[in-house]
Image (tube, rainbow, N blue to C red):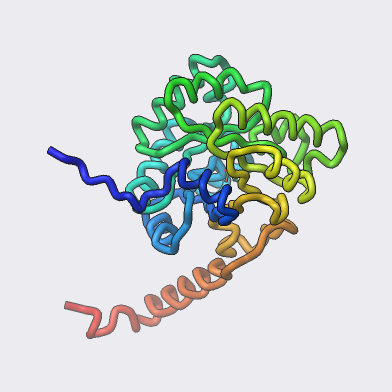
Length: 271
Ligand code: KIV
């Protein structure tokens, strides 16, 4: 019996080649089958099931509460939708910090149960042993430096990171360590554009920015944010590529009206 493998699927090797070729990489978050299908069909290179699901799907203030099993549940739908994109699942807070063994066990669980292609985790030198073990075990790993929302309580907010020389140098050092350890890509969140460009040039793996200027190898945004589903959230780095929040509200208001005045369903919409 042979298994059909689509060769149009994005791979970590293709992403690395895109960096070499100077071809920009487009990444967005996704959390469900229906939207992920649309995003995949539209030509996205990578789909990230971010732990931002804790905020945009579950309504939590922080990313911290979401669990491994909840991430797996969401990722399964995205994996079923992805015919082209490489699917990355965020490892949630607490799933990789306790010990290297537990980190590898959780990474393997996520890969096996969700069917995703890779995992992402936040941090530099502090979590390097866990990253090395995962990569040795065959798990493709994406790093995440700069603003790392799982550390919000340590940072005391979501402000710009690495403004000062010492933090910038540590970030550059961390990025080189992640690259040398074999991370297939690194996300840089909310850092000065000049620093992001410096990091991008200093490492061999593709660097994906969010709030990190256009000198990175690619960009990532939270899908709900770029679609304008939450009009109230508009940090400087975010561009609204649509105003779906207003459109959804308008459609629902029209539906409620049609139900109340009994114009829906019409004769044509009835059996
Ligand atoms: O969880 C997430 O959505 C992320 C992106 C902001 C990169 O980590």
